[in-house]
Length: 563
Image 1 (cartoon, rainbow, N blue to C red):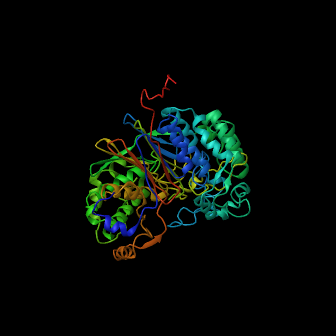
Image 2: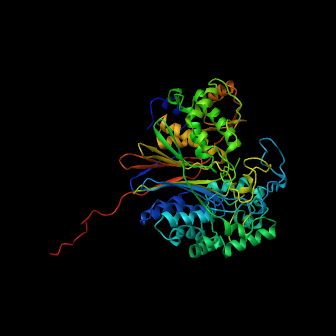
Image 3: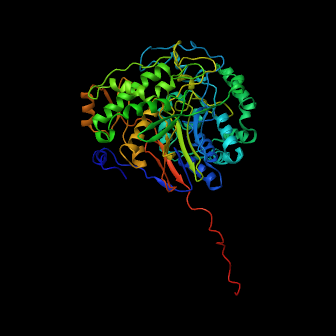
């Protein structure tokens, strides 16, 4: 299960709440059991990992409506059976009519730096950026899948039309943003039918959304991007005071990108390139930590957590300065992932004392997202992170469609003149970090999670758990986490007080939280072809494995002809 160097300390910190699944024919791990089952249904029907991914993503838009939707955006990291890695960038873009000063910021400092007057960048039609999910999913299926779009949409349509049972997690999410949701009559009718959040166990039907999915099954992405659905949505925005127009839908285009690559203790780390900051800064942090004996420091020790906090602060200082849409900002990727640059930063790090860090290069987002990890028996792997940004996005439903738009404009810097400032057509910057790790050229693990700014730091800690501390996959995804970007150090409440006190003594200002980031979904690959899927307790994540297989050749039953 785990290496001898960490077990004594970790056993005192946490016990796993879920169990993994194993298989040799396919694995689907998502943050809802029905979405995992939808992907597994496609694998069982003969589809590949890409087919299963798209089926699961569409189903997540039904059963996780607070996290993901076709009016959102995201990135998919695909490893094909022939060893090629492809990144499909379906991130949202600022509307063509957007401008750097379109919002009025209320503060120039954290924690309210991204907030604006009347919350216009977070709630309502002005908060919506041009969506990319539907275009990206349909393109991915067409390029790399084997099933038609209508087939992979069947599970999502079924659950939208017939309904599904609300989980406690969904009910809690509804309650969390109830004040905002109550302002939109369609959201209120769907999620507050009796004036209170839908209770766990209630059957939730979404007939209008089922009709939208049927239109997509018939017409594909063009129904939104240049078609009747896009025109209908743009018309609603125009009447409601938004800036997104039909041309934004028609002109939207995905981008196919090459991943970034680095190494850590003999493992190759393959991650997302900009405009995601996930892969670049994940590799940057691991490069710095490679100079320390993390295993010897012990899992959960104050010494190890101090180093993790310091490299997080270094990464966020550089992220603020230089990581954005590469079409608008010259991102110094080569320097950020260079081991020589890591050595420069490491030389400045004090193992005994917390510091404030500035950027070493020149040139905040929502935690409410979803992630899935899928693999098939032939070697295709997909790690995909998708979102509508905040819980329930811009917090309204487009009438007649069942669609909840994103509020991606909240991710842009509302202050003009910065790397992340608003510009027409500019892609949002994200911390999404669907990562695939190779060992000796073969897949070792694929993983990712929701969590906004906390994503790539959590992926980094999970890789330390797997590689340095030799944890099992289930232990690695459930282990306690911390996070900081320079002000407070968030520490999960499973970390003992004695360790938190030791961090305080080193100069960290700690803040106890129930959880850092969201539910991680991961798959680990063994040399014998076995794959293990795991999801953590922080969401409804469920691994569904496909085992068994076809009958042995000539195994048909022949009745006794003498009878």
